[in-house]
Amino acid sequence: LITETELRQALLDEAFVLHYQPKVSIADGTPIGGEALIRWRHPTRGLVYPMEFIPIAEETGLMVPIGEWALREACRQIQTWIEAGSQPLQIAVNVSERQFRWGHLPALIDVLLRETGIPPHLLQLEITESVLPEDLEGALRQMAWIADCGVALALDDFGTGYSSLSYLRELPLDCLKVDRKFVQDMEQDIGTRHIVQAIVAMAKAMGLKVVAEGVETEGERNLLHGMGVEEGQGYLFARPLPVKEFELFCGL
Ligand code: G
Ligand code: G
Ligand code: MN
Ligand code: NA
Image (tube, rainbow, N blue to C red; front, side, top):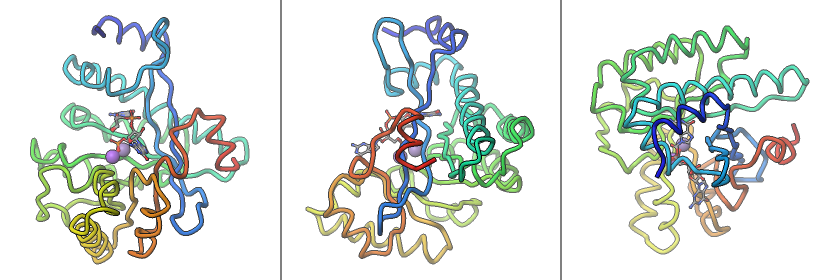
């Protein structure tokens, strides 16, 4: 079992690494951006996935420093691409409820933008609906501050949480990510297909971009394309990749 001590040591040892999953154009597969996903290079167990250690990080308060590491690493990676003269893509970083409750996320983002000098729009934060009901006012205030910096905000896993549509228009969002459970079921289940259609219509009416998560089949891709979804992410296109492979995939 993973302990808090081990996670602290992993931070000190710089044992975490980011993989990047491409986001592509549903129409033609052109790379549009990427989502950073953290992994732990464990000395004996090999690559450990976030499912196994994020919950422990959340319980022990280590989510804040680990989340800070991930944000800084992603910003540095964007900076590296810019310095190398490649056409940089927007990179999304997941941010958990804990990091909002901490209260210093806007200040951290400000520091990272200054440290790296990257154009703010190249960074996107993915938040889930679960950050909202806890402390809606606090989350809103922080999101507004972050959006004012020019950093993009996406609502992740949309449709699975305690969706209250009433707050949706109050959030300074750029993008909705349709949860992969809907994408998975939409070929077999017409009801699910209607839900996706409704989400897309709503997002468009609100001026939000839609990204479909977990696209695994050509059938799903065709349905999404027909609905006017422009961006997709999933094993059909690419898995989360080590940085070198991501660069190859995206032509960076
Ligand atoms: O890569 P994988 O599918 O196993 O990721 C599982 C979950 O871990 C994702 O849903 C994501 O929300 C979370 N996660 C991955 N990387 C990070 C990170 O850098 N910070 C935070 N807060 N969550 C992450
Ligand atoms: O929770 P969040 O959406 O941030 O995390 C994305 C997770 O989804 C990652 O763990 C990633 O490995 C996983 N993922 C990405 N594409 C696919 C896919 O096509 N199918 C499945 N089953 N999982 C995917
Ligand atoms: Mn995500
Ligand atoms: Na998601």
